Length: 201
Image: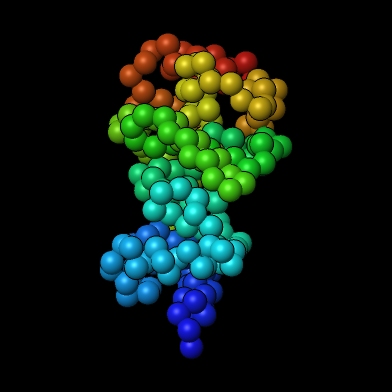
């Protein structure tokens, strides 16, 4: 069996369990090739054949990859939020196709690759909470997705939806919102959220 076919079969074998996302480190472990130059030579035919595509430095995607898995593999200290989470919970209709929104500790980051843009908004470490984890992917709860959306709206971020008309709040636990607001040190934001919720009740 030639090397290209062998590595193709390896990718196919682990594609589903890896969410179709492979880092350079993953490929080193799968192929047993530690030398960077030799590894790149083995990856090149897989790219030419469309088995793998380079998304960004050190990260490759296979057919049927999970954008959500990719987002958390690129920045592990992150969780899906804003429009991506709101849409997942059917709190809004949809978000722009080909874009995943997430929150991360640190500054804003954007990664663009084949057919997909990953947008990370930066938050403080103290605000990294309010998410659940499924299949190694963190996603904000409805309450935290709403708080993140309002938080960045107040900081000037604009969305493809209207925060006053397009967000369905029926799945939001107001007691949880009230509890979590105590973690925010910005009185202006707390006042804004309370006014927003009062207007929507």
